[in-house]
Amino acid sequence: MTVTSVEHFIYGPVPKKGYSKRARSSNINPDEYERFIGYYIPLDPNYVKAEDVFTAEARLVASVPALEGVYFSKIFRRNKLDEKGRTGILTHTLLIPRSALAQGLSYYDVEKALVADEEKNGIPIGEVPKLDINWEPVPLEEEIAPLKSLISKESVNRLVDGFVKDPQVKFVVTCKGTEQKDRIKLGYMLSKLLDIQLGLVPITFMTEPPLSLSTSRCNLVLSKLPLTLPQRGWRAISSLVDPSSGLGGASSEKAKEMIEKIYSA
Image (cartoon, rainbow, N blue to C red; front, side, top):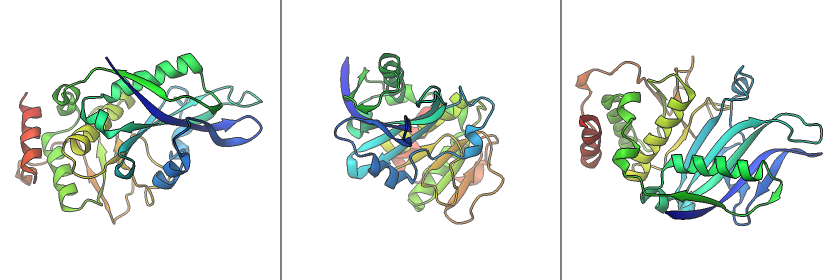
């Protein structure tokens, strides 16, 4: 068993202060996250007003080469967070070493560590220690095996081609699964394949609509396409219907071999 200790912070309601940086370990700078992502809580307000708001969660996975790490954010809601016991939205962000992810650290082990931390410490305030992630290496093929049930091979090839041709392109990808857990799973697998394994571009994925499509830096994994998309810098890929077979394969030979292996298993 390997233990990786990571820096982390929590942004959310603080008693007698409102929304603020609520807790942090000593060697992480939340302001860097805010500058990189644009917001501490980058969700569309309509999402947090949904009927299932107390159970709904979002994930953001943002690759940051300058920090040799990946921001992993769980965005969720809890109650009794301030002096009046009000409910609020929280962003719990970990800075995970890319090296650990490349060596087989699974995003699901990161999830387990976050759950264990909240069970032990609740939603703390002030300085906190690093968060320990206990993990055994998971082979990439095993971690991303469910990929073919959530997105077609042709759609993955289109993602690879798009990033190879234009590293600045942003995608909205619809997921074959309609549940929240399916979108999160697809985001994790695409991040592991396209960024950590193939190193195409530093990829940022989010599993719910952001505050603003026009300024968002995130690729989106959604259940359905938004009604409108900005025309510049965005492409939409539907996984609900397989594209025609005439679209061709992935540009990268390494990517092509990996994708063929996944979908032929």
